[in-house]
Length: 196
Image 1 (cartoon, rainbow, N blue to C red):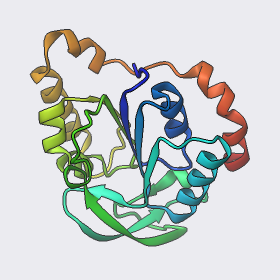
Image 2 (image 1 turned 180 degrees about the vertical axis):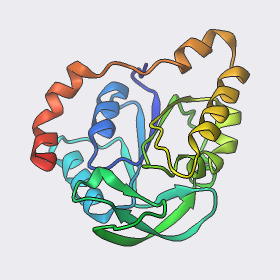
Image 3 (image 1 turned 60 degrees about the vertical axis):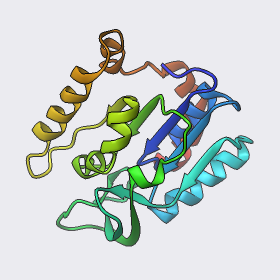
Image 4 (image 1 turned 30 degrees about the vertical axis):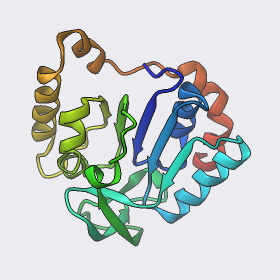
């Protein structure tokens, strides 16, 4: 899916598993834009980029949504992958974070090949903030669907609309999620250090 020279956007980058994988795929001639509002994850992500000598990743320590401002990022467990801007009961930790609009952050002329969204139930708000990017550039979209307040159907409807508006030859590719098993095995020591 990703080739040398491509641009990839990682929204909800966490400690950088997908960012590192994408950085390897696009190579130093490509680019990765990573968005992660959790300050602990941003520190780990920057550390992983440093120890892997990766310089073609731009890290933005912000969340994305349909409007800019500040919001509370809630961790629903001690696992950093459970952080969400969605309203949840019983957060074990929370942070006040900056929130930006994706369309305002991704304004340069470098085309985006693919966008990954993993934001634990806040997907619809992120997608609404990416309307211009999605409609003009039509990148591949990889997203997790978390059922919060019945938004799964709304997200799927938007994705189906984007796919339907894409050129026929690109539609199959848009529906496919790439297999990263080989690359992920090389990154497992990093994963194990933070998630074991």
